[in-house]
Every structure is written in C-alpha cells, then in structure tokens.
Image 1 (spheres, rainbow, N blue to C red):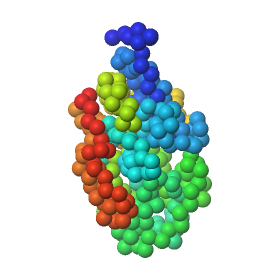
Image 2 (image 1 turned 120 degrees about the vertical axis):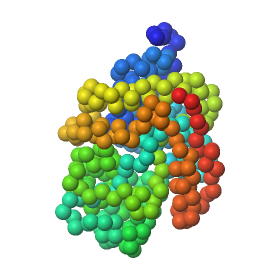
Image 3 (image 1 turned 60 degrees about the vertical axis):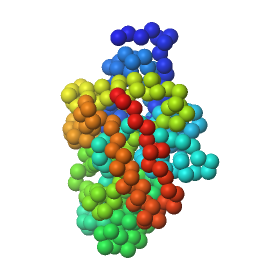
Image 4 (image 1 turned 30 degrees about the vertical axis):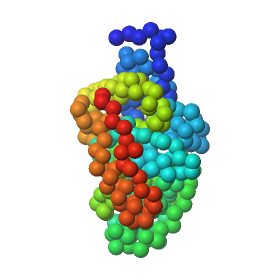
Length: 304
C-alpha cells in the first residue's frame, strides 16, 4: 500500500551501537520500504554521530529521538533518577540474553574467578561493574578486578589491542569476530540478566502515538522475519551500513547465530514479564538497587 508522502509520520530511532546484526531488521525495513508501507519515515540515529555523547535513553529524554534501543538497566535508571523520566519498553530484539563477558585467548583466564586481579574495560553502564564483580564472586573469587572506562566506542578495540583483559560483548557480534576468545554467560553464574536491547519510548510519546508505534513494530517485525528467511540479501543490506572496523565480520555467521534468538512471526518482540521480575528481584536482594519498582511500569504491551 502506497502512502502519500505528505501523510508520512517521521519516527527517529536512536541505536545503542554502531550498525550491527542486532539492527538488521530496522535497516531492512527501511531499505525495503516496509516502514513506508505503514506510513512511516524512519530516521536511524547511530551513536557515532555524536561520539556517544548521549545514550539512546538520554536522546529520548532530550527530544532528539522518539524511540531508542537500550538494556533493561536504562529503564530502571531513568525511572529512579531525580527527576525521573518515564521510559517504557514496548518490545525486545532477542528472546533471551545473547551477551557475555569476553576474555582474550591465551590469557590463562578459563573461568570468572580467574578475573581476580585482572583488568576489565567497562562501558560505565548501570550495574555493569556490580555484575562483573558478582559473577566473579559467584564462581568462588573475591570480585577484586581493576575496572577502567575507555571511550565507549573504543572499548572493543582496546581489548583487541591487549590493553585490558576482559569486557562485555554480544556473542552474535564480537563473539563471531573472535570465536577463539573465552566467553562467560551471565546465566551460567547465577545472574538472571534481563533483555538487551529493548525498544523503548517515553511514556508521553507512547500515549499520543500508539497507532504509529503499532505500525512501527509491525514493519520492524517484517524486517527481522525477512532477515531470517533471506540471510544473504539481508547480510548485503547490513554490510553497507557497517563501520570500517566491522567490515571483516562474517555476517552470514552472525545472522545465523542471531536468528535463533529473534523469535518467529508470533513471538518476535514479545517480552516475558518474568524476565523483568527476576532481574529486579536479583538486583534488590544483592543490594545493587535500593529502589523497589513495579515491573508493570517498565513495559507496555502493544499487539503487533
């Protein structure tokens, strides 16, 4: 269905990272006209445009973006800061966590407890440092790790250069680039990590744009389903958006890994509220977060 250009609704989407396989559905829906077919004009904002001066959540708060991609921690952070900003999740990209702590090959670090006395390159995300220390302790270590904060967009390169021993990565991206690295998943060490990335929106924007958001999610799902069924064509579309340093990643391998976690036509984007509940409970009982939040405030279900 063609929509008159004067009737198009613009939506600005802030990415959580430079374009990668996590974003493939958005890029496809833009390229293939799936958004336009729903009356939407999408502006995709990559964090390298401002050298990650502002997170996607901050861009939403400032009115620089309508939607953003961020982890569950951002939802909590923005609802508990002073003054609070009501950020709401409307969908998830993955049905379960695909991230992990990565360590260099040949580092003699074979499990989290071996990270005691070693170095960690942090993105400075909410709870990140607590989580890595807790992982070490849960594996029998002391949780004594030297944490540094390189420039966000340079964290992975600092690992590749050997400047630090470990960092947090996505298995379907950095894990594909360096399969010889060792990876420690949160769930294997008693950490019920929540969704990342989520598609989030400010509560006020949600209240006034429910129809547009439903159409956005429908078109986005169409893009991710296209990627699952057309891996070569989808990878070619993604390749054109990659920064130079990522051009060597095996995109077919990254997509084949990722598509197992995207879900299907029925489940894509759907959030299991228990995942939120378990993470909130965990950060509370471990003294990582003192605020008690109503899990229902973090999520708004849209039928798409």
